[in-house]
Length: 271
Image (tube, rainbow, N blue to C red; front, side):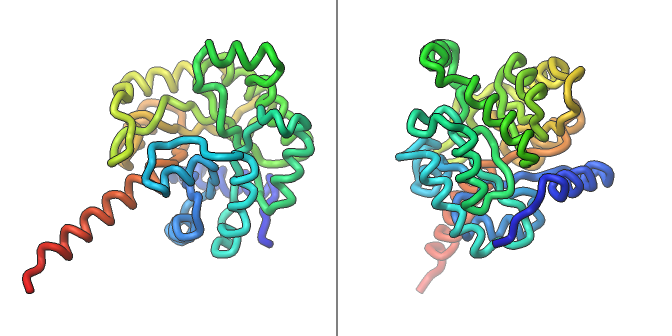
């Protein structure tokens, strides 16, 4: 089992920043995608239970027991990925895992080197958030998760869709804060109603500005119209983001494009 400490991960990320190289956290929910991402130079491998739906040819969706699925995926990915830290997506508000410290320990024991709060309530709208908060299973559990990770010296990343959430995650000690600007556009199963890139950049900047007086986290962009490498260039030029977290952009859209193109090429040949 190859694991990385928080100190090692942060040193690696800060080296990328120092050398003006964009950080890439590659969503990889199967061994093949993780292996290719690692070999190509990804800085982090991020494992989401929702990746299962993408690899099934479906729109990004939660399928089954999120934490159970993500923990189970770790061994497959560790089997073929030795040189890149693997980060697990934790559903902190899982009602069958009320003890976030024990849940965190389960992820670390499975072999993860860090965690990210995903699935996250931050993206789910006020109505859903209010319902969950009333029963004590809202965004407060995600904050608690990051606080526990910080105390245990575990590397942590935090998705945030709102300024108030960014502030709470900065105060909780998240190492990376990821402004989430919506479901990713593009591809066969992509979201078609993404905000304009200019609007996403404006939102990212407001999120970053909201927590500037707290812990100096590393900011990484994600979602919406930020789907292709050229999109990230515009984000880097107009925000303080130092990298990108790709989920559909890594493990869905490239696969859709590659298979579609190669099948068309094979079929174009005459016998």
